[in-house]
Length: 252
Image (cartoon, rainbow, N blue to C red; front, side):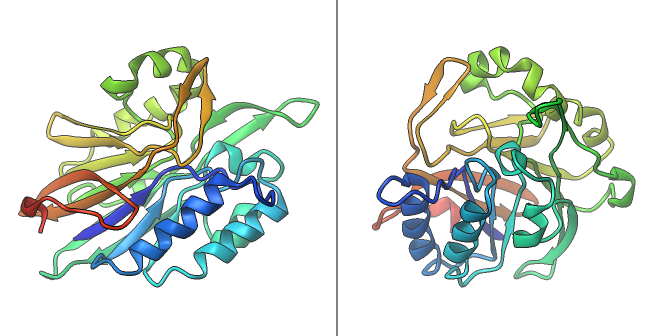
């Protein structure tokens, strides 16, 4: 099984000032030439969740020639809880996908929800995924916008954002019920990281734009994530998305 993960684009739909959109176009051009099974965009496709931003994001993804999934992020619901599904389908889903050796893998896509105050601004973020609907024994990969575990390389950022990230971490007890959990992917913190904890690979994907998180500024990442499942083990490496790119021989 081979797949690509792409970090937060934050598409703004502003002419001559939309780094996320420009980078996403370049990334799709590269991915179309790659031998992969699918692509996952890790949330915050839009910067403010407007119709214009959603429309541009969907227009760009229309050029992608590979199967793809989009995770919903907190920026995608800043205006409406419904626009995401209009443009990208269900925000929560379970997909079963086969690989070249006929092994079936279970992909879980976790939604993001929020309460709103009297001014309509987002307050508490939460998830409502029904993990009882998932098979706890088959090879499983989870995709959620917010990290379930704080990656070691961005600990300070996670700690300062603890009140925001708590809803991601609260999935931990549910994930412990899976006996064949291969990996958990997320975006949100705009940092590249990949840690193996108790045999499970926890990965965060760098965002495509410059953004401040709790006073710690994340530079735009020039990488996307390349993953391979081989002999029951999930491998991951960031790859430079501007041609030419290289993939370590051990991944092939």
